[in-house]
Image (cartoon, rainbow over all chains, first blue to last red):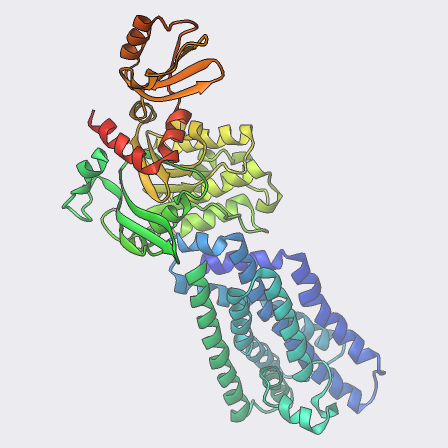
Length: 242
Length: 323
C-alpha cells in the first residue's frame, strides 16, 4: 500500500494543473487579499493571520476534493478495474487512495504558511506552527472522503465539476475567503455548522492561542461520518457496475 | 467438448498438481432478458495457450470478466486453480490486460510496471517484464506519451509483471496496426514460451490460428467449437469442391456422397464436402469435371459455418471431436 500511496502522490505532484491551481491559487489569493487593503495597523496584522489560515484551508480543501476527481479519472481509464485484478485488496486500494490524497494537501498548507511567516511576518510559536500543520492536515479527512464519494459515483467530467463546485461553495460559506463576521447574521449561523468553517476554525483556534473547542471537533466528526458513509456507498455502487 | 470432460473431473481441487487452470461449468450471465453467456463449459489446462474466438457481442468479454472475478455469474461456476477467481487474484496467480483499460497518465513505464509487480508475492524482475514486452528502450518514458502499439505493450507488461501463472488478454490487438500486432504477438509468444497459461480473446481468425494451441469458438454465449485450428476446419466439412455447370442440371448435386451444402454462384457450383474424394469420384462419373477445383476449407469458412447456425455447429463439433 505504501507503494500505491507513493505512486499516487507522484502522479499528483506531476500534474501541472494541480501545482498551478491547487497550490498557486491560494498563494496568489493570500498575497492579494492581504495587500490590497493596505498592510499596516492592528487589523491588518490580524487579517494576515486569519487569511493565512483561511487560504491554507482553502488550498487543502481543494487538494482533498481533487483526490476524488483523480479517482473518477482512474475509473474512466479502467485503472480501478486493473487494480481489482492485482492482489491489492479493494480496502487497501481505497484507503491507500485516501491516504495519498491526504499527503497531497500538505504542499498548499506548507506554502501558504511559509508565505505568512516570511512575507507577511506572521509570528507564532513553534508549537503553534506545528499544531497548525497537523490540525489542518488531519482536518481534511472529511473533504477527501466527500471528493472520493463523488469520484466513485460520477463520471470523470461530472466529478471534476461537482468537486470544483463543492470547493467554491464550501470555501465561501465556510468563511475561508472572507471573514464570517462580514456575513449577514443568518448566513453566519449556517456557516458555523459547515465542515469547511469548522475545519478552518481548527487553525484559527490555534492562532488565537487556544485549542479547538469540543463543539468544533464534534461538528467535524459528524461531517466525517456523513462523508465517510457517502464514500462507502459510492464505492460499493461503483464496484458493482465498474 | 471431449476435452472438457477429459479434464473436468479433477477431484484434487486446489492441489498444486492439479493440471486444470480454468474451469467454467454451466456458466450463465444474463442482463435482464439478454443471455450474454448461455451455459458455457470450458476447461483450460496449465501451460495451454487458448484463444476465445467469436464475433463482437458473442460473449467473450463477459466470459473474461467472470473469469477474472470482476463479474459474478448468474448461475454456474467458475474455478481458477481449484478455487474462486477472487482467491486466485488475491494470491497473485492472475495477470490480465482488460479490453478498455488505458494506463494512467503521469507515470513512467518503469514506475507503472514496478508498482504492479510489487503488489504480487513473487513478481518477475521489472527489467525482465520490460524485456518480454519489448519496452527496454521506453522504460523512462511517460506512459501518456507513447504510441498506441507501445501503450498496448505497456499494458501487456503490466499483465506479466507479477509473474502470474495465468495471463488473460481481452482483445489485446483491437486498436493496433499491422506492425503493432506483429510486435505484440511476438511478445505474447515469448510469454507463453515460459510455460504460462494464456487465455486471449479475439475476433481475428488468423490471430487465433497463429498464436493459440487451441481455439474455442464462442457464439451467442456458448462454446460452438473447441480444438486446434485444423480440427475446427475438419469439423465443418474438410473441403470446398467447385466446378463449371456449363448450363448443366443442378438437381441431385446436394445428395452426392460427402456433400454437406450446395451453393450456385453464377455458372459455378460450390459443394462443401466432408469427403472430397468421394464427391470428386461421383462428379467424375457424372462427367461434371469442367474447371474442377478442390480447396481445403479455410478457418474462415469453418468460423462462418459455426457461428451462423450455432446449434448445428455444436452438433457438428461434437461429431468432429469424436472422429
